[in-house]
Image 1 (cartoon, helix red, strand yellow):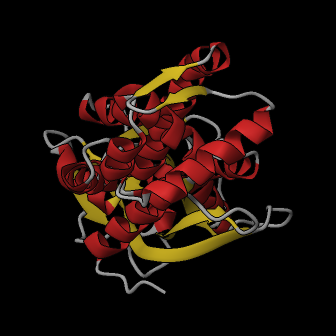
Image 2: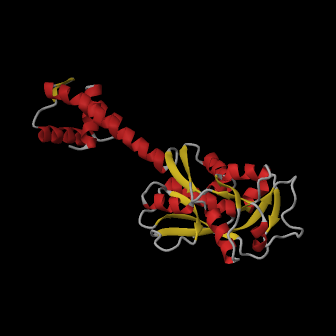
Length: 297
């Protein structure tokens, strides 16, 4: 049984005339009759009472007609649904990103993407790079913005470097400056109170590693917060924090750059190697690269 045969059958049943049905379907009348005969042989029953000028459904035809209409309607729905997804009128993208990027880069990128593809649902999952990499590997995300390198034991991911971002020290604008110089050294953090992110934040690990490389453990007045909370604690004068430059630029806090290029992080977009992301996610990746001026490859 073929969809074309069911379509021919339903049209003849509607107009009750083989020639007019053939005209409506833009096929030759002998071809239509041949397909109806083939369908009847397939089903083992006649579907029409054929008399000159009078075509009527048999009992078998009456039984088949609602089923045929339902199958044809479901087929049309399936075709329309697939086309809407293929043409990006509908769909979903699951993006993972660290909170610092959700507070800076991600909103601008999603605004551009939503303007181009308003029918695509956007799901954003905030987390540290380790958590996001695990969710990518488990199939819970289509794309993720992560901090590289990934480290030993990371799953097989396809990554594309997006940017290298300077980290800076932020402090309360109405409080004392953390240094008298225009830039601060990592070693100077030894004697300064700090506000620190919760465990799992890439910024926490980067900052602690830099301090230990200078031979000391940093001192925290408050620790365990998310990005907004940490910025609020800094604004309240509880200590300084190390944050990305893009976040600092929007924070309204005093910004002090670090000396040299040690306090820097590399941001990449990643997806699984063994499962290419769906088209909607690939388009989001393209918008992301375009927004940052990165060549696609």
